[in-house]
Image 1 (tube, rainbow, N blue to C red):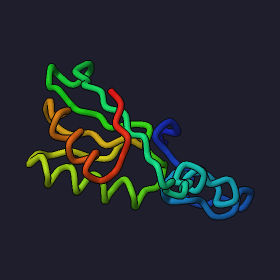
Image 2: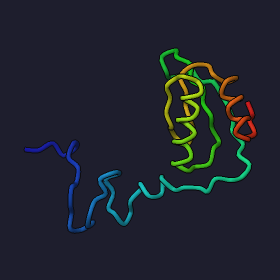
Image 3: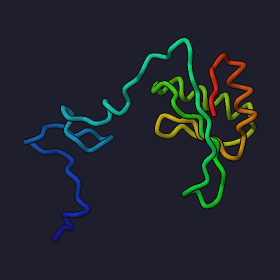
Image 4: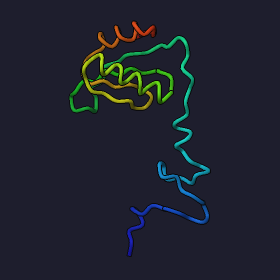
Length: 118
């Protein structure tokens, strides 16, 4: 007997094809709505904050309120990581960098022509 709690539908005639990313039927796929892209505006306002909560005491610099454009965020993340010499990632439409790097990130963003708050 199979455990139905851990089973997931691979294909069903009632729903049609299933999206491999989110597990929903392709016509109701949640991947396309979550990956919606905004155009990158001319004047970008970036906000900085420092987080520690839920990270085992490690500090993380977060650059948020950025345009929801995956290519833009990935490129910005790579540039900031290179400039600061640290690791990081893109999560929930924000760039997260390991450590307290607010001053260094502020300088890089100002050189790029962003308006920086926080």
